[in-house]
Length: 197
Image (cartoon, rainbow, N blue to C red):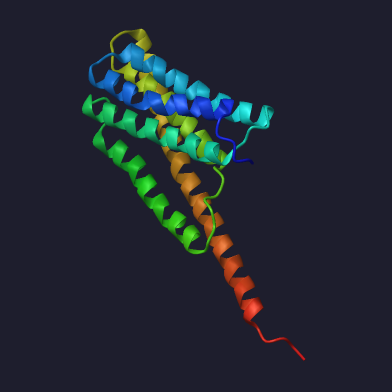
């Protein structure tokens, strides 16, 4: 991990961030194929920036913040578009947004104990990828034709898997935070204990 700003992985993450408002605008004006292209780019670059960071030894503090931020913004932007366009019901968006609201609790506990945010868990990364695959398929499924039927089936499958994994990652994160806090308290009690004669 280093403090470099300009790396290839960071450039990809930044490009994804810049694409978020463009993507949402395209969705709202019903330019689905262009929006679909941006979502595909977002999904591929999400995989590629992590691969490049490890391969080129360019893992950075900035990258650990940009990457999940871009993921979450794409998820939120897509949810807004899907709900406004009546592709998914509001409750799906609320379940996913509720997970993000919940995650503020363990993060607050971590900061109170002077810990930085924990690394993204593999389950969480898999959940994000499932959702990034699900959303473009759901948009395609909103059209008519055989391809749309298949897209809708696979889109909802990825949505269900992604949502389940998203919440499971939150549970795992909470367990990690609890272990850290308990270990922190144990070490504090040991430091404060009277030495035995």
